[in-house]
Image (cartoon, rainbow, N blue to C red; front, side, top):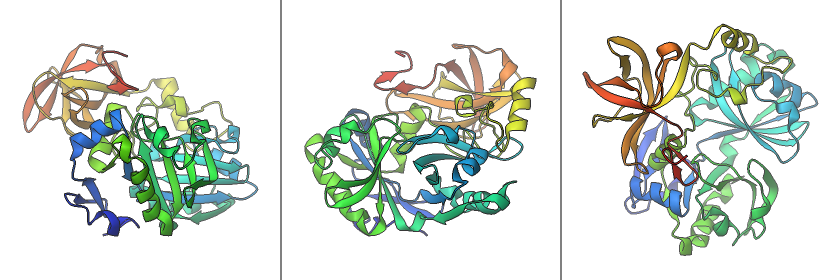
Length: 372
């Protein structure tokens, strides 16, 4: 199994639970446990090792135009220091991967990829997309880079001990190079938890030192090292999509209600024709949120029924630590006629269990969905 540069450091922690996550040996939780780690990120600050994520540098005179073709969002509008969320689509409109793009200048971009898709993404960017013959220079930095995520309402207070003016870094912008104590890093105001926070990228050799510095800086704020378990519950509550679940090579961004990141007015991008046609003809499915009426845990791929008719499937499900309710996202027929509060059924272990449609996200910046 693959291991991040921090493995030797945290694998020695008492109580850490390591699992196989897509071929990576990673912590699902540390000694505090998933629920405590989740609560700490919601109320204080947590630190994640997400170095399994992939990074590549796309550079050259046509880097902007090339990425603008590959991506659904408007890369051509980016300026130096900006971060943008986007997706790459196949010609049929389904999703290759969702990405974060960091604009260094008009000829150089850092592209951050999901860990499970690194090889696929690089092949698509370099060889398999319809305009691959026009590709600029693409350099894989994944094995040279550590990525840490400092997340929670006290994240800025902690980082200020190492970067005194980090409060001037605005959401979806970054600073690079940035001195974080003795380590030079790229620091961005981004995250995958629904809370304020930062993601920090540095050379692999500096990763353990940066990890220790951040934990030490956050000691008075109650910082905890956090694993994959709470990362998933945090992103689910905040309606942040996970590749292979809410988006995939069988689901389009429009079906996943991510149309805000799809700029159909662009002159061209891969998948534009298919997505334009889907919007024109009527998007057939929609991603909705449900809370369980009957006590049961909905899991991915569970079938969803309205009466005797199967109308969709669960994309992700869990027990929300914040709401203390079983909840899920479901991909269902758009013309089902269901509205907020209406009931449907989810087949769990062969039994139909009642659920009801609710507002999403389940949680947003300190508020539950019934308070939004």
